[in-house]
Picture 1 (tube, rainbow, N blue to C red):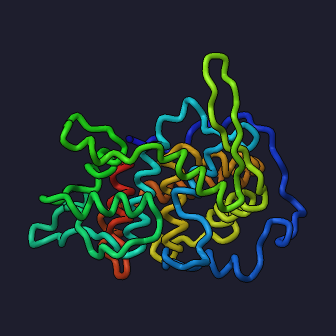
Picture 2 (picture 1 turned 90 degrees about the vertical axis):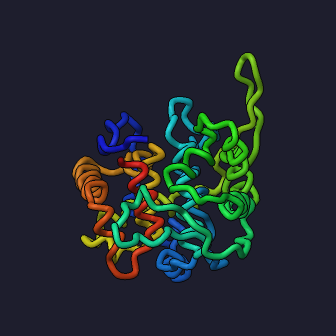
Length: 286
């Protein structure tokens, strides 16, 4: 899960210019601007979860599946789950103590077992609640991904995460469901049907590192900060930057690298920080 090499090499993707497109065409309105600023993950106005946004970025629009070569998105989605639970006030890190334990050494503990209403989140929350002694963020990403050599921990694996998230997006009218034949087998795919939602997501990310760039991570919207980090960790951030012209692409990439190079330990102790976020970021860049 080492993502310290920065952004991946830019792919030769046909640019789809969004110049001259109005806010209405992108699906923006005053309500959407409010949603972007919300940090209360339980708000009914937050239409997509972090997991759904990262998956949507990774799905090929017409084909309806993620790249077969992407081996990062699985763990990235589990990171999204932990961040969502942290933002919703369900989990937190144990106190650093007198010895000032580092983010990756501190255990993840239950803060509230109130159900979130999201099946995946509640399943992960149940595992965290029932685990004694507690485990670290790094361990939970591995357990939820099924990437552990400990057979006793395999029961923590969240299965069919991509398919379950895709079905959520189908229910929300963003994707549809089809069957495709790949010579030796049939596969369920989920092509894009609501292009406005994906355009809005892509533009939101582009704006965050370009026209609306805030050169202070503590003042950035926590949800957007997490989306940038976890899209990068999932190797899908490139898909949001591909339509940019060369100058904007270079500037966006530079600013993302600045975020990746932050001292997460220092950021986590600043006022109003959500420590779980920084612990998850640290787990993907260690």
